[in-house]
Amino acid sequence: MTGTRPLSEHVRAHLIATGVLTTEGLGRRAGLRQCARCAAPVLVGLDASRCALLVVLDLAALDRWGEAMALLAGRPTFELWGREIEYRNHFKIAGGQPRLVIAEHDCRVRAEPSAEVLALFVSAPPRVSPRTVVF
Image (cartoon, rainbow, N blue to C red):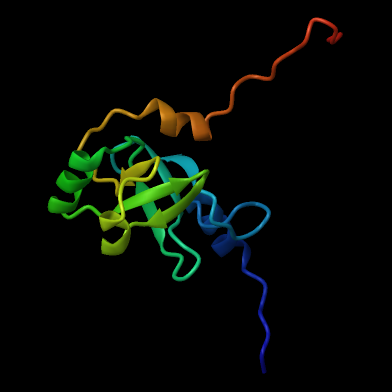
């Protein structure tokens, strides 16, 4: 018999709380969360379409040296394409630096959130034109 059973409510609530599932369904878009251990702001999301592992990432953008240091410390690196996360394997690392590279979160490493990463996930307040009447 091939088919899917609906998720039980407690499993669905857990998947939504951990960022794997959105209220609309499963997706690759990362979301801002708070680390359960150290309370630091982190990104949580699925890393790729092919395997879709749950990853927790720092908000600090890395340059080439930062990526090298993260890899030497045993922290995998990822690319941000909009709000989607893509794992950086050795082919992508050798291919050059994309716009945004971030590393896996480690509670022992405190990194300042990058403004360019935050700009993707924190929306600006709505702009009101002078002609708009607000009641």
